[in-house]
Image (tube, rainbow, N blue to C red; front, top):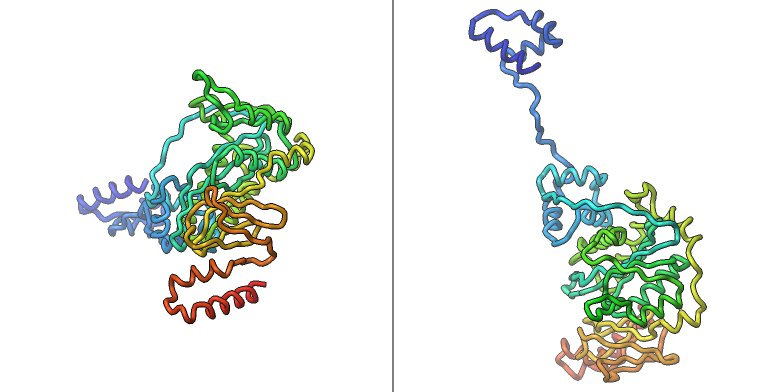
Length: 400
């Protein structure tokens, strides 16, 4: 309509005629003053307006986060919410990124959808070798074990440094305890801790089969190169990718574990696109269909009473929420923690490097370890002993 009006007005101008704005207004259903504006050169409202957005002030940071390999828009959005940024709703946030051409769109392949009855199946997978850097430039390469009930989509994430068979047992036991029962079937990817390859054929590992028999579930394996068969747990792993947004923004291992738990809680409380309700609600029904856990004696027989961890830059290791020291020369190395009675034995390879009495104190420095650590920055040996003693006393009293 606007194009036709402008064309007619141009003809009137070329013919040097006087326009009748009232007649033209009735013809085009406009106000005569609007017609006069077009005659005087008005081009109409612009198709695109350069409106400012409250997200503009975060644009540089959004671009920076989008450079992270494997990052998702939802992960950045959740990260900004945790930081207290005023970013509005997710749909507007996603639209802002698309309108500003900040993220290329990727086509996804279609795959069939399938559903499972309550309590029938869970799917498990690893999010492997996630590399993250703390605020203090300490590198962490971690794994997240993902366990997802097929009907409710209720998830359980478990932080792990390694992916051994014992890590699988520990993670499954924690997932069973968290959900209050065992499904009839668990679908595994073809992970080496579950499957042995014999004569180019897949066979379930003997120890893994014994674990399944004792806990009362059937082991099912994903079809090779058919990722959609474990699509539900793959979807859960997308949430785990929210971790990438915290790169250079977390304190230490404890903070990282806390972030994973926070993400896990969000996943279970957000509305699931497939079901239309949060997993936590459907889980209230599905848990009634789960099989009971076996006797504690069986559970205990599969639990690892040893713990592998790394020594932090403060020459401490974490054990049951408390921190214990080792000599500083082991900083950055992997050690084995083993509790015997009320004592903590710490090994590096097969060498016993420290024994601690288990304590209720948050920080448990062996004076010799703390002195060696302080000696790296204090050159005057005459004052070193006094400084060490004073600092340890302050540390004990301050953190009680």
